[in-house]
Amino acid sequence: MSKKNPANREENGVKRDNRGRYVKGTPPPNPAGRPPLGESWREIFDKAGKLTRGQLLDLYPLYGKRLDGLPYDVPLRDAVALSALVTLACEPSPGLLSAIMERVDGKVAQPFTFEDMTEDQKLDYVRQLLSSVGFVFVEPEKTGMDDQAIPSDPGK
Image 1: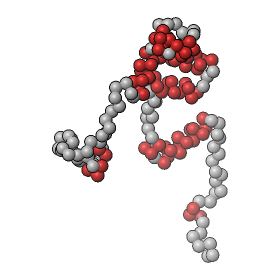
Image 2: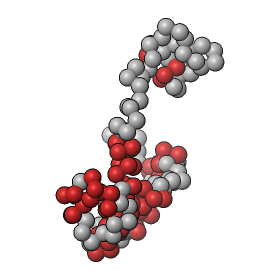
Image 3: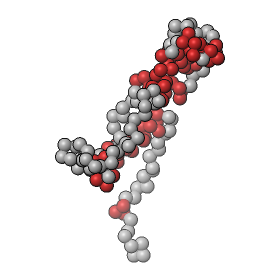
């Protein structure tokens, strides 16, 4: 049994044989099953996005009239995408731009993590970040004394 996959642990009540199949008599991990066809949000939005203005007018005349300037044969998903781009062009929003870019291109992969760095690398990284925004580092002044010059017992 794998320790990484919680579905393979017996403590969850799921028992599998050597080939990873469920052992007969074990309760299923998803007893309700998947939603019936057409009832998941993904399927609903997919179906609605494929509708054109003409089809929307046939099904829901009130909503179809709200899309007055849209041609009859343009799918609603195209209209939504164009509307988001026009909004972004007229009223720039970093949040909207970021959401669109991540949705289209995927999130930017981070090449390394802070935990992978040594202490010196962490200090250099933080100094570079701070200096990039105008922070100026001043090295501490040398007093001319080093650790060995300080007596270990000040009373002597």
